[in-house]
Image 1 (cartoon, rainbow, N blue to C red):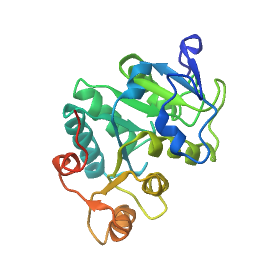
Image 2 (cartoon, rainbow, N blue to C red):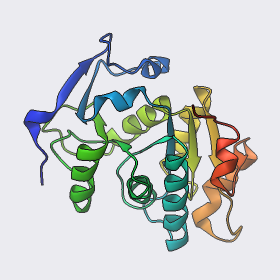
Image 3 (tube, rainbow, N blue to C red):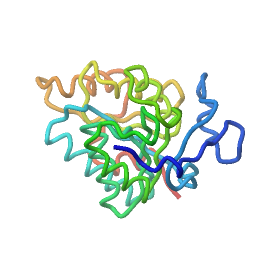
Amino acid sequence: MTLEKQMIKKIMRGSPNYPTRLNDLYDPPSCIYTLGNVQLLRRPMIAIVGSRAASPQGLSHAYFFAQSLARSGALIISGLARGIDGAAHKGSLAAESQTLAVCGTGLDITYPKEHFGLAQQIAQQGLLVSEFMPGTGPRPFHFPKRNRIIAALSLGVVVIEAAKNSGSLITARIAADLGREIFALPGNIHDGHFAGCHQLIQQGAKLVCKPREVLEEILFP
């Protein structure tokens, strides 16, 4: 399934619409491709990330945090993946707000395919971003590259539910290296779904149970 290729815009590094926060990376993309409202790149963003194979409770938490933070003025950013990412985008849209999805493919290709409708909605009500040119399909190494863009664009990263090998930990670690705020939700100590979150908390991430605890650290105009 594909989105409208002719509507995709290319933004070169150094142009007025190129997000300055990407320059914090040691390897900022030379250009990004966008589909939707480019002005959203100027908004303060909070990333919500986590497991693709999330529990029903994790999905509920992602939806709730995204909805609450969006209503408080944050632009929710995530990676359009299954699980926590998708729930975060949906929660933000349910708040009658906008959301930004960073993709690991060209913007004319939706991955995973079941998020085609969600991607369409984000293109209409928010913004899709990728450093990959149209026609580029998914590859394993694309997603760590996508994660670094999520980390750089955000003011803070909220990890909802993550196992020890979760890709969301890559996002959190890059964000921490860039000086962004890192938050993690705790869970059952016997549940492997939360092992990554507990590890982040041990390493200094802020333990949060309510969206307002994120807002106490990151204020929005």
